[in-house]
Image 1 (cartoon, rainbow over the protein chains, first blue to last red):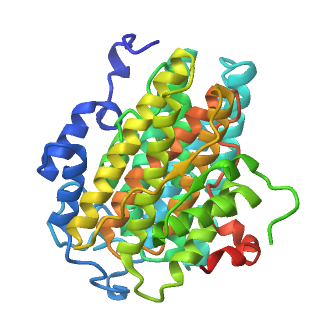
Image 2: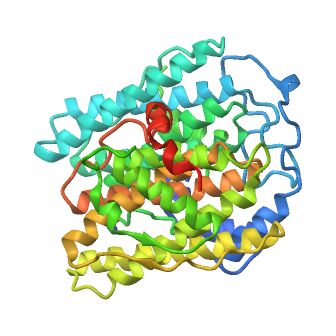
Length: 246
Length: 210
């Protein structure tokens, strides 16, 4: 049980960790949805947003082909205007390049964690497995971008503090919970069914990673309760920027 | 045609009764999972939900999801009657709560969309002890993850899709936690994949039609 041990200073929980773990962010979700119980809030959320089922169809005209994810219309699932098309302003290539950035971070993080020598035995085996998973994600995301005729963003230079087993596990928790929330935040913005299927099959593996690491930290596997919460592109990019060296 | 030796035989110990469309698809998902492993549920469900033509619609998908959640909620409720160690009891209680909230959320959503939520199916599990519970819990949760992932690409409404994502992430977290409790690798494969199971599609065809 490490819930009460919080490192001071640079390890102050960031927005991402808070959103990923703090039950008050669930309350925020419920408040946003305008209901008292989780179930009715969920339905109210659907009702509030409903009515644009299928609206926009292919939406082909809105595609942009910039390689950098554009924050415009940034996945604000929780706060966007009712009836707005969540896909507006972002192409599948944008979303995949955003995912690719996250996978660069994840693979670099696990490489550093394994190399740090802070982990042995089962935990080391776990880190190796997760690293292999992230490498497979990276490959799939990158080749999907290429298949769509997009240009994958260049590999990121990264920096991760490798202090102690505990601080590294906390960092892993942040990255994995954030990654799961990031994929969740994009699911309904993706246009292509194939890209969606790939994103979902990565999403639930990031969730497995997050739950595993949280278990090692003595935290519940589903910290937000019955419904996981999405994060927007801006939230995730803002929060992960400090791991990018440049 | 099911292979002679099923990959996940304990899924066969689950009985789902009822003549609703939801019960039918859940039975098929369990059969596909038993025969070919939990990951086969996704392609099966994807295919089964496509049978209704272009617009079999979100209500059918939600009816299937509701039946699945009823099944999972009932499963954890039964588990509570077993003699379980404290951490496993806590896990079962917590996951049971999640599944019940999923049930309520799906019922409300079906209401909102003008549908009629199907009643819970009668279900039976061959639950005897903690080991058996954990083993079946794992395969059931993994079948759920695969099924949601397989169904998701059929969903028309962006809001229903977002909501399904919120649920499937929690099912995946359950699966990992149960694997950890069993001392297993929690994410043995890089993808909870519907795609790579395309080869299975042909094999599960006999289950697809009523």
